[in-house]
Image 1 (cartoon, rainbow, N blue to C red):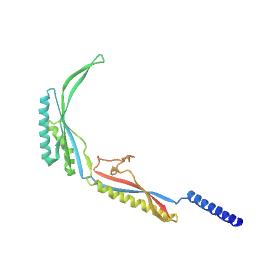
Image 2 (tube, rainbow, N blue to C red; image 1 turned 135 degrees about the vertical axis):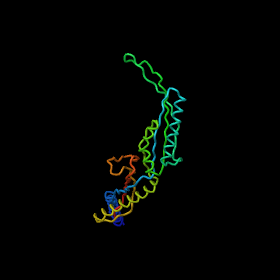
Image 3 (cartoon, rainbow, N blue to C red; image 1 turned 30 degrees about the vertical axis):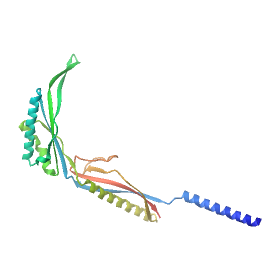
Length: 241
């Protein structure tokens, strides 16, 4: 009986030692993984343009300044209609009013200010999918200087109305690219691609085509170029079998 008990005890020790050793080896040598990054990119042409311009009047008399600005507003509207811009695309924002004051100095010391007049400013804004038409207007708007309109034009901003669809397409492209890379690595290492363990999307970037514009860690969103390039990355992590 003692011999039997000793034999059972010895077998238990050997089995426990084997199981512990196997567990240690499995912990020390986990299944391999492959992590790859794929790129999706697309060139596109903006289909929406936003353009703004300010016109200004200055006069010591507030009512006269307002009358002059109202005259300019009518001239600007008529000019844009003559250029083929639809009236529902023309938006005039609220008038802003600021007092202009001049600093006074005596012997280099500031002594106060003196009132010079009221500056009234109004912005006209056009948002349209007729990009070429609005581009032409933005270049020729200085013609209004000949009509005594003091106007300051801003550069047009360009957008794309189908950006959501484009982004989904690029995510699919980047994911496929990352998977192909992972498959090649697995094949070259003599293994097979296993289950997907993790997937993460990188930063979405929009830059001007053929420009030296830098990518941003937070993502760039170019609005100054009509022709743009969008890009996104996908990082996939697979098991190796």
